[in-house]
Length: 348
Image (cartoon, rainbow, N blue to C red; front, side, top):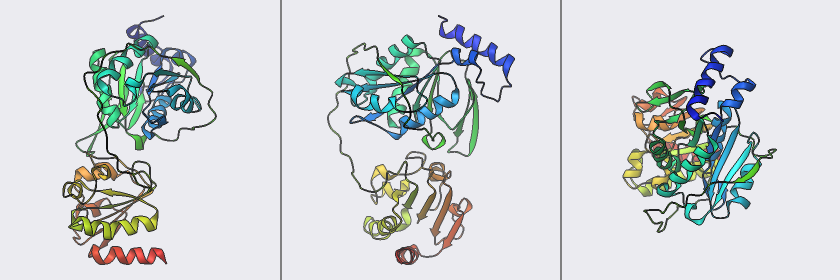
């Protein structure tokens, strides 16, 4: 079997004779050479949305796609769930309580061993907290450079990613024998979660001791839609002035629309909303059908996390607020009057 570097050279030779640089080649020869490992994130035996994004990106690369998952009892839970996803060739599972919380200190060596065993040319994970902490360590152990937060795939070695808070788009070509990628969830969707019949195989477990210990976690639970995947999002900013006003104005509107609640960094830093609700460059990236925001001026860091929304509606008393430059619908006025009025009209 060819080593990764030799496989890369052969892969380029095939591409040079079959297609232009900008297209994804799907010939049988290419499919035999390119092999992708999608790293799945699971919590309590259930796959997270970032896993589906990783699989969607892996499938866009072409070639066979293998999924990888590790944790306690995963073969009967998240691995079985992944096996039903259409387009996967197989699922590699490692059952070990030590990997249940995804601590990168021992998860990275585990992943590296399985990458080497499968001789994968590409490794893909979601650009979530899990992927962002895990894959840089994997890249360092493999002595390759990671390409982070990609939003597009031009070929098996050329990728598109935003820089400068989304104000510029960079096209990156990697010559590393193994491509390590994290992908933006809002850019890779549409995976069919049923109809697959992937086999589940045992992975390699190096049992690397962890230098850290999982102590506890505190999660904010809500019956509202998940912010990262919601089709409607209502966000509030610093203009709401206090947590009491945030809850009084934003929450009823979100409940009326059946929407998730978001917040700007300024609102989060001021204690108006929980950190898990932050939208923006240092928060979550969202792309709902409707993004309705009130009291948000539109700093570029916030726009980076929501400007892919299908319809953007903004309420702000400042007619020159930057948010109106990207909004499809804008309302200039006092949000403490306009938002409750809007909520009442929607209820009717």
